Length: 492
Image 1 (cartoon, rainbow, N blue to C red):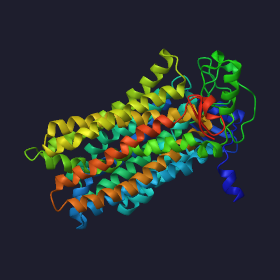
Image 2 (image 1 turned 180 degrees about the vertical axis):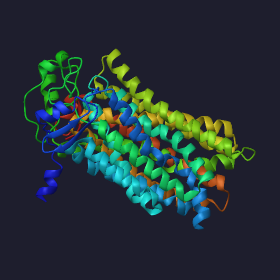
Image 3 (image 1 turned 135 degrees about the horizontal axis):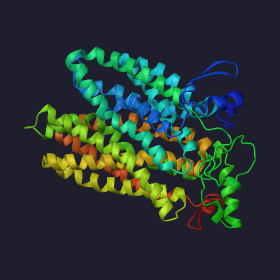
Image 4 (image 1 turned 90 degrees about the vertical axis):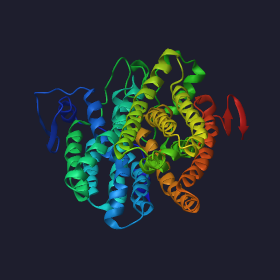
């Protein structure tokens, strides 16, 4: 039990002088205790992390292209489409669990070790049943591994850094969709898993060489890795707390500084058990239930509506959806950075505002979607799905920086990973509800079965609008006894 408790304590990682010197070069390898080989021909720059994070996310985002394999797998295994969809939902379940468990490991051992574990798990992509368990776990580890280093290297552009990393996951639908089609056509189904797994392993090992955390004395544009002005930082030793992002420190009065100091000293246990995190967790699940549940069925649903369209048209539909998701993951986090700096907003409030707008747009579109399905209006359906892809991608890209703003850089990976367990619950529970509801309505028509599922998904999304309003970003409210909102105590 003590070891388990110790694992979940966030400890400030230490680096030797030799390691700090070696990390000034892009390529370095540890060859002994505090001994490093360095390729002195290329110096390291923080912008290299953007490319490494982008590529690593593309490798693991092949989960998005699984819908293209449902029909071939059904034919090969002699199973129903619903049965073949099960590994996808199991993989999504493993994503969240692995991400949460890996958070403290990433903070202690850095992104290199985490990416190496991921590369081994990804190689098991060659096994169909390993797809759900091992591959899903690998995706979860990779999902949080690049996020924490980027939040530390870019305290001045937290939203942009997180969005750029996660947009690789969105772009992967485009990349792996094309790769899967080529492999299926030229080599067959088995080689989709073998070639894909080996390729990912090699790319991830290259990314592991580049990814790293900043040195303890790191400063950029006057900010340390916590986003605090250099002259305002304290010298306390971090044991079980994290510093919160706050680039407005010089503007705060004495009372506000007391509360911001309390944010910096939150334990991981306090963060996880707070009312705000409970509401944020509920918001996360409500936001992403549509994307997780319907993603493996978009191809079949499009072909059902567009009876006169070809398979190529359906693939183009998925391609545009992936591009829209990519743009959302990139542009909405950038918009949150711009909004915070231009409107001089409290950073977590600015992220929450962008997240809430994305959730509101999703709720409106989901309310209109059943009518488009009943009328078999394929163009309207496609436009709605593309719009949903943008806002879902934007919400995804905004979450890591929101976690950093609320809980600090050393808790970012773990808190974001715990949020991803919401994907696990949605993947299992939502997938089960979808399948049961689909089976119950399929005797009338397949289209009615899809429409019936949209209704309960819409209700869940609407509940998210309430939950996001209950997530407090004002530190004065957050640390009052009971539950205080806008200065008013609602619960003691």
